Image (cartoon, rainbow, N blue to C red; front, side, top):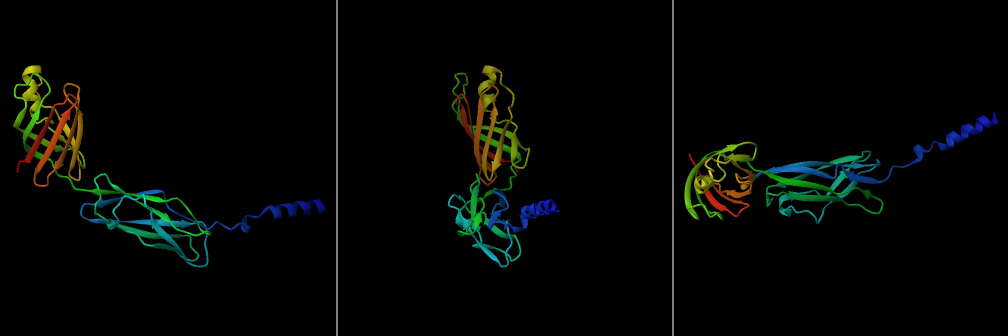
Length: 255
């Protein structure tokens, strides 16, 4: 009987889980989140904070904006604190962001949780903020191009205000193809000399009015396109190939 009692006491002595207090620890729900803001508008994001323990009174946890944030302070509203209610272990707060000085590359808003010696906090949260701009550039365009070739073959070189017509076709939310990415210049320059007499498709992506594209030309050279949507039915587009041929074009949409 004494042996059995000793075993019983041993097991009772090892059952200490109920005597351990959870740490006074709070953290964001994640290390990163995304927020998309429509052009000229605003958006909000609800973020949850979790605590490892529960207490009998409300806990007010400070919210801080980290210096590593790139988002303009005029663009966001962040509450000073988040309150975890008594006998609870989570709370939410809302971040408001407006389309104010958000670059086309996007911005970041980094938040941290404040605390004291008795409160341990988790990692910062980084909110990646991007703009959503409508893009409707498909259609028929008349094009005037001025440029130069580094090849000795073209006769009309350099060229000014070369007229051509292209079709711009939408292939995705912000992506397009151009029926001839060179707007007729390769045909003008290289048809007779090298038999390059067909249109060659180009492409571009529209990010809030900034255009960029890339493709491989008929001679195996990489072609890079840059440009802008001027907001008045015209596009300004520049392309350059790996040989140094380049041209700048004004695309005017045909109504």
